[in-house]
Length: 169
Image (cartoon, rainbow, N blue to C red):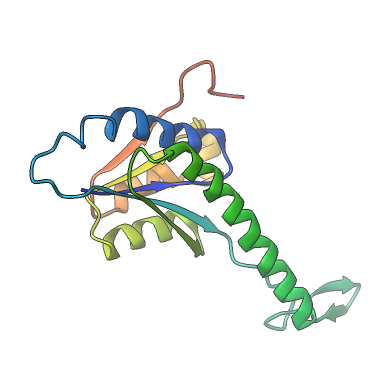
C-alpha cells in the first residue's frame, strides 16, 4: 500500500503523521496479506519565490523604482527554502522511527494542487492531510488544503482532525 502524508510546519500536519504511524501502519496495514512492503511518502510543498513588479524577477525598491535581485540572492532564498523543507521532513522522519519504510519528497508550488498531482502521478492508495480547523469565512479567504484535496484528489483522502485540546491553539 502506498500512502502520502502532506507535511508542513503546523502541529496539525505532524499530528496527522503521528495518527498515521500509530493507527494506520501500526497493525492495520502491516497485517495486510500479500507480504507487499508498504510505503509512506512524506511530502512537503513550499511556495515558489515571489516575483514582484513589472519584470519577471523585479521587486519594488521605492516609488517608481524596481530592482532586480541578484542571482546570488535568488539562490540564497531557494537554498533557505530547501533547508527549511529538509528540517521539517527530518522531524517527520524521526516520528516514523523505523516503524515503516518512509521516503520524503519536496515540491514547489501550491500545496493543494501539488498534493493532488503527486498522489495521482505516484498512484497512491491514500492521501492523508491534517486539518487546521478553519471556520467557513477563513476557509473562503485562505483556502483549505484538506478541503481542496477531498474534492479534487483522484484517490481516497483521509483528513485527520486534531483533538479538541489542540484545535485553535
